[in-house]
Structure formats: structure tokens, C-alpha cells
Length: 447
Image 1 (cartoon, rainbow, N blue to C red):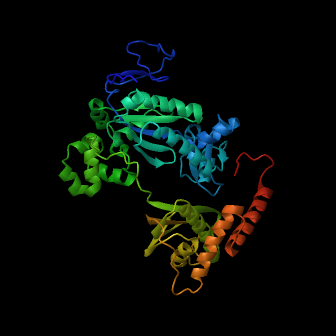
Image 2 (image 1 turned 180 degrees about the vertical axis):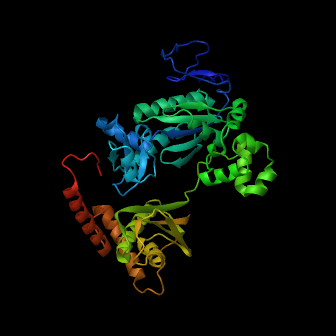
Image 3 (image 1 turned 90 degrees about the vertical axis):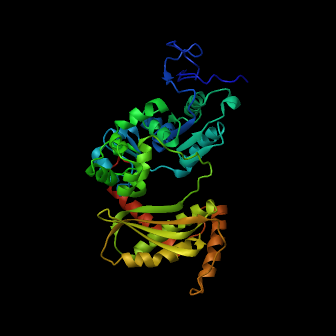
């Protein structure tokens, strides 16, 4: 296999061939090109699927391909993902569904399937790993890649391999990806946001400094509105303003965040692409159709998310020493409470028992809540189930839960239900009946 030319600075976006000074590609006849003086020398990439959940849904249902689409829950839920068409109306992920529908009444709402997205994301990740073993996933639909030294293996420069990946994903998966290419992770991720959707942007050593200087401090990933306001109050409105301060001045004034910002303002990021990046938590949450203040009903919902968290942790063979309760009030105020144990927890019964007193402390029968979540962190491999010495039935419940896992795996998720599970099923059936009676004959929103 011939050694690729590494000083290529102009490539065909359709096939990756060198274009040199030609306006059309001699190999495929394409007229789209990618040009940068450092194109043949850069090898750190950030690959990000474009509106991934919505793109998969549009691929599977051509009737909604040209419509504004979001993936999310019902009117009481939140937007999990919004397509670019929906974003034109101001719809964004994490937005309450009622607000999204107000901004765009013609919105098509799809409930979505995490199993389907995880499957397709896994297919794309395997395509990335075919290029390099140095793939660091950030989520289902995005990852960092280090293609350093892959030229001899593939007979292509990293940029050419990435163009091929982009085209292969579109052809085989049916969704588009945007790519950022640079010499470190920070600038690669920055570049991937510059040319969406189905874009390919490059930031090299020669142009990164000038590009960053004119950006606001909030442009840097991880700088939230509160920190940006604090920086602006100190007279630091642009990244160029930050560069006028020394690292010591930024660290003394703003701590570790200030030091990080000072280094990123110069385009400095020495983190390696880590293919074994550890997962930090496993969690689940649910948004209610109506606000709940009753403690027993909240406990039923808590059990539901504890069960989902336990199922996910068992599937990944993980347990956690820290358990977290998440609540969101009717006024959208978020509350988190945590407990840490010496022994890692994995069973739904154990997670529920740990979080139940935290819920009891917050739910007084008057405060209304719209969301509840449960999670575990401080992850490790399971060390075996430990019964509560003060609860004689804990060991029996643990054994029963393990047995029910086997039954559900063999006969389906509805094979075994607890008393709380049966109550939740009844509530859902009643809710569906009420919803069906209230909906018009041709609803525009698919809940």
C-alpha cells in the first residue's frame, strides 16, 4: 500500500482525493472541497452526529423528514433532542415540552427508543474503531478520535480517513455527522460545531489563535452563563481579554476554572484521547403527567426509577457507593440529595432503601414535584449483595430480585411485578384512558 502524501491541503469532500488547483475532482467529479494549509498534518478529531435521535427517527419515517421534530415525553416531559428544523423556532433540548409546543405548534413529537439509538450509535462507533483504536466516546453519538500514525495502515491521511467515515456513515447508517479536526481535543470539539450539519471544519496552529481571540468567553465549552457573567463583570468579555492576564492572576481570581480558561484561551489542551474513559454514573428519571405531593405516590415513582437504574447497572455490571435522589419542584427548582456507603449498591431494593429516607425528608405532603430521579456513582464492579442487618427481610428481597431478573430476561419485562409495579401499571392504564378521552380525533402530537 503506498504511503500517503501528508502535505495535501485541498481534498474532495465526496471521495477524499487531492484536488490541488482543480475545481472539480478528477476521481468522482465532485465540486465540494476541504482546504486548509495544515490539513495533511492534523490528526485529533471530534465526530458528532447531527441531531442524532431525530435523524434516526426521520430516517425510519420519511413522512416526517421535512417536519420540525423532537424526541421526548408528553406535554409534561422535556425535549430530549430537537432537529435543526425545530431549532429554527427556538426549540432546544432540555426545554419543557409545553414550552416547545408553544414555540412550534406544528411540532411532531416522537417518544423515541434509547435501545434503537444505542444500537445505531454502536454501529457508528465500530466504524470509528476500524480507523483507530484510540476512540474516546463522550455519549451515544459523539467521540474523540486520535488518528496519529494511521497513514501507513490505511494509505490515507487522517483527514481523508475522516471524509471516508463521514460518507460511510451517511450511506450505511442513514444519518449525517459533523467533524472537527485539529491538534488537540479542545480545538477539535470547537471546530466540529462550526459547520453543522454534515460539516467538516479545521483549526490548525496557524489560525486557532486568531480565531479564538475574537470569541466571547462564553464561547469556550464548559463556561456556563453564571461564570461568563462573573468574567464579564471582571472586564473579561472576550478570549483576547483573558490572554492579557497571567495564569497566576486567573487562578487567584477564579480558581481552577480560571487557570483552565487561561490555558484554553491560548489553545492549550494536553489531554490525551482516552479509549478507556470511565463512566461516572448510572441513573434514570421520570417526569409526571401531573404534579405530585403525596409521599406514597412519590415512593411508587421512586421505586420505578430505582428499578430502571438497577437494570442499567446490572446490564453494565456496575455498582455504586454513592446514591443520589433528584427532585424537581412544580416551580422547576432542582433538588439533589446524596448518601455514600462503604459497600457498593446495585439492587433496586437496596437503592430504594437508601433513598427512601431522603425522599421522606423532602416530601412533606404540601410541596409538589414534577420529576423524580435516582442514580448511583462512585462506580465499581459489584462485590456481592449485603443485607441490612436491621432489616431481616432484606436478604430475601435481594434474592427475590435476582430471581425476578432471570424471569424477566427469559419471559419479558412484565413477567414479574412487585406490588408497587402493579400499582404503577394501573396508574398508567388509567392515565392512558383519560388521555384518549381528551384527545381530538386527529392529534398533531404523538405522545
